[in-house]
Image 1 (cartoon, helix red, strand yellow):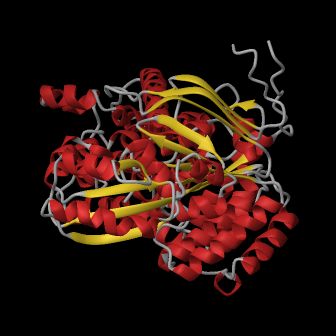
Image 2 (cartoon, rainbow over the protein chains, first blue to last red):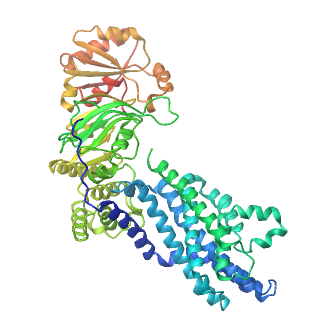
Image 3 (tube, rainbow over the protein chains, first blue to last red):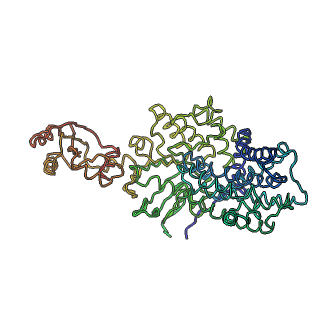
Length: 267
Length: 340
């Protein structure tokens, strides 16, 4: 064997690169904070207003519907925000702006670039979801809250954000830029309405086939876990089932997503 | 492992590098080897699809080689991509600047990714922006920058972490002449500071002007590798005469031209067809005769006899070009095609 140069790299180089890429994303979000707010809370805000306030005031929904809707909307916000934060920029960055190249050439493993995307999406999703709490109080007057359910609430939110990030990574690397509108109609919308955010899952046994469909959407388990945490009196899927299914979904989505990321990053 | 392949001293080394893309029937890069020293400007010259970009992609860790070795500063880019990335920088042909932040922030964040301390990266960003004539636009986002300006920003960005090797893909394609000269000047300065430049280009002038050595690529192979002068000297003869007739002609004309006194060799020139597909050879048949004579003496003396040969066969001369051989002639000699 001939002498191969031993790569010399200052200790911590890779983590510093990771931190700086994350800092860049936070920096951009901070500078565009109003746009960020509009992007993440408008949809759940309207859902909350129409379903929770308007329909209730007009007497079209039963008493207590607001209480089961609110945890569902938190779940929706957690999943969708993380997904949007990852999928759309990624499609653009790989597809036409090529902005990601400078990060792929930074001194860190390619997996770090993917991991930063996931972490950033989770952070964005958590911020957006937490903003929903004061918004909910403002619109509804009060929101269901149980400190006893807090650990489950946090676990549900985190896993929800990770599920969204996993979906985002998967779609962001699989979807061709010219198909981005298709992504919206074929994936986004069904995901949005089969995730049990507007109805509790057990009550669906009246529509068996739809109950089966919703059971295939990981978001359902986020909604149900949050209901278990905040409104346990409403029939819901056992929290431990939710957590197990979510951990499994997150592992699968992230594994496949990171593989897709590698395929796009390295020819 | 090849024993005679010493990694000492070279900034860039490539040995028997092969890339075959999935589902492709031929290798995009097919056994390429070369090395470049610190401070060398190395030009990779070839038409579109020759394999230049894929070669550079492998060296810059963005394309996984099918076989062979690629090293940056002695570091194997496949086994140790992270330390390899720390030593290199890439200036692509199309802008990949971060559109969400100002160009100054583009420079600063790039340096931050590469671990340049905060104070230093701010100072260096201002210094480079000044040097590249961009200081007054430091706070602007890259959205409305022209191609030439983006190119300058990207070169400045690449220099922020003081790379040992800088890869430039068609650095001045599409730039106006002033911007071209400006970029060339900056690149010469870099060479003087011991940065290795790997330049991919299909611009002969650029390669001849800037490169210490030029590798000519076509169909994934490195056909020749030497200094521009040596490559040109390798062509026999002292002058060239390029003739274009008004209509196609058969081989007999070419033979007659070749038998003229003072003519060493005759080459038929085909207009460059994109990637030399099958259509190219078909259309070549119907193209008006275009030949290049390599001469032992002064080209001007051969014009009249050559014109006479054509006239005897009913062909009229449309265009005549006299010259000493250029890199373009080398390329035509090696591939039988022009670059443009």
